[in-house]
Amino acid sequence: MSSNRNDEGYALKDLGTALANAGRYGEAVAPFQEAAAIFRETRNPDAEAAALDNLGAVLYGVGQFAEAINAFQDAVTLFREIGDRRGEDRLLERLETARDARQVPGRPKA
Image 1 (tube, rainbow, N blue to C red):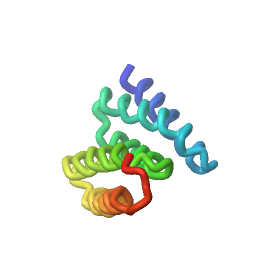
Image 2 (spheres, rainbow, N blue to C red):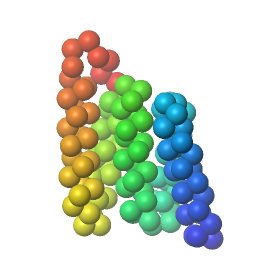
Image 3 (cartoon, rainbow, N blue to C red):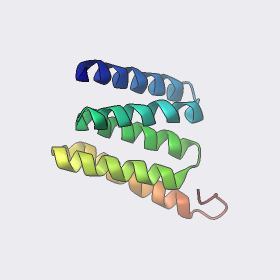
């Protein structure tokens, strides 16, 4: 069962990626959220961190900075727990960018 659920998670992550690559960021949110939840359920922290990274990117893309920050923070935590220093560093940069964007005058503080 866990393998099938992981496959479902990867399919949803791939769908989210395809939507994001097509510039359909808003539509990509749900697949990434579902994928992250499945990977959490199946205890697949590498894939969960990647799904959260992608989720944060599309949330950032639609101006939902607070939600993007939350996704990036969760991904940082997972990358740290699994010892992926590169992933952690990359996400810390994205987290900083999202925090900065949230502070830009004239931008909604989503």
